[in-house]
Image (tube, rainbow, N blue to C red; front, side, top):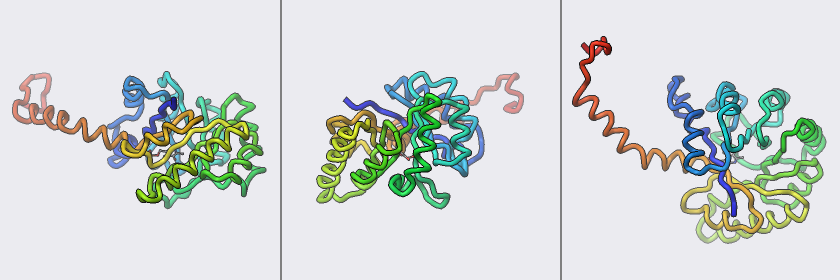
Length: 248
Ligand code: PXP
């Protein structure tokens, strides 16, 4: 059975839209754990557009499941990972202009530099996963770096038409088997939704799915009504407590 890593970046996105303190992804991670998350994933981006350094530091202290830090393979991020010591680092490609991670890491193109980084992180006790497309050449390159894990990019599967989806699922299934034959452990994620997750969760050998956007979207759908009701009560019937000076 695959486990569930919940990516909470989009909670931070809402906070950063106002540069304020709410919603705070740190206590939300606890709620995700109460809901059954086996791990919490955050992507600390170079431009800090959602998750902030402070979030990662506090999550390291509060997450009781597993903290997976997604990051670009840069010296700045490596230093942060070495200091914070997440339970896993997932190396992802990153471009400033992209809305979200657009494709897998081209490991085959940068085996030597990634090998060095993977070794330094793993020597420090941090397991490393490489986010790659479900492609045998990339998987072989991942093995060559010494990384023990891969995360298969499910974006192409998620975006495929109904006719194309079975072929994309077959690619993911085959890549999972190939990765395991190479001695790699397998996670997957990106673009998974309540509608398309089950066939991926059922792939033999799949260990963990990292899912973010659809869960945060669903949280709004199931939570908005009670949030409005609470505000409605305050607006209709405000307290006139003297301690609440500004309301008098
Ligand atoms: N895995 C990786 C490597 C990602 O970059 C992302 C998006 O940040 C996810 C999983 C989660 O994707 P989604 O938000 O589409 O569920």
